[in-house]
Image 1 (cartoon, one colour):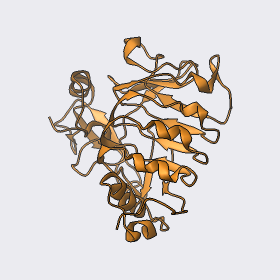
Image 2 (cartoon, helix red, strand yellow; image 1 turned 90 degrees about the horizontal axis):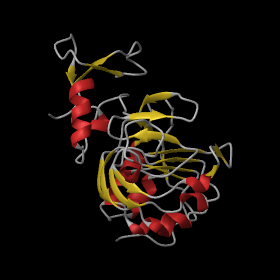
Image 3 (cartoon, one colour; image 1 turned 90 degrees about the vertical axis):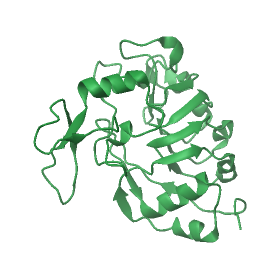
Length: 262
């Protein structure tokens, strides 16, 4: 039986965000619920599973489209951080109706179309929609000039701010930390820059998670081939951090593995 109504739960699809590397941690139970949502099959078993928060590393590698039924949880969802995968289609405008959500992570997918007015969500503190090549719209509702209206807010988008970009293909935002989805580089208004691709672990297919999706562009592939065709594990603490990838152009180096399926 599909259950979408009258369920008063908090959905925690967890992510801890770090500016350099965007480290993310997800729970097994969240992954179960998340896959159920995106396949549009939610059972009482899936709902029960959300109360367990056994943390593991890795992305959920979701595909499909964002279900409009999420709007049934606008008064319950606190975090919806499902970055990393091949989700396509648009972001439902019903996201504007969330009343308690504090963190939204829809980064590193294949989303397209106009973005909702995220700045209308009064509780939203963290938003990441980077590395979605075909999203358009504006996030300037979060801005007061080049500063955030709320100093506790952090917004990451594919907006003007990094060099070598066609403004017409990107999101407008004067205060955001902006990323160039062509070469996986992010920068802020203070001149700092960092890579946006995720190397704290490998995808289920054994590749750099940010590179393992169905909508890599020609520019993405050229960047990967030239700058990061392979990765080596540089982790110094294999117990707590089994894999910490570093890009290398020397694919014959000891321990080097392909970074994507080329």
